[in-house]
Length: 170
Image (cartoon, rainbow, N blue to C red):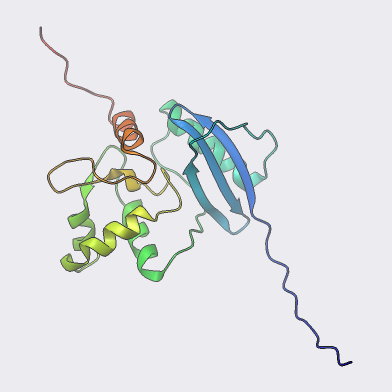
């Protein structure tokens, strides 16, 4: 019997944390290479109390965001996707808090107005909700279109970021 040597590469351990937010539970995954994902869950979550340093920084910044005291994130990100998806996600990171852009504007910023559908698809595959602000992308007519975590959450996030509303005079 002949033995074939196996090269075993021990992968990095991806850690997971959970937090509760005003619009549902969030699952946060990452490792020392950076934050890999943040996404909403449709079920109740039990918050994790002991987290690694890199996940705790994400949790702290997300909690500050939901408290209204943070508008920008300073985190090491490591989303997994195609080169094109990563280019789109980088463009999303450039959208300031309380501002919105259209899917067409994202395509234009990528240098090719014809990639609007591909850009919209990449936007929908964003693995790091809120921090890579795909919720700030709207239809050309100003409508709230497409959000993987539900339009009710997209509306809440946009309202949260721009709390000044026109008051009724009557």
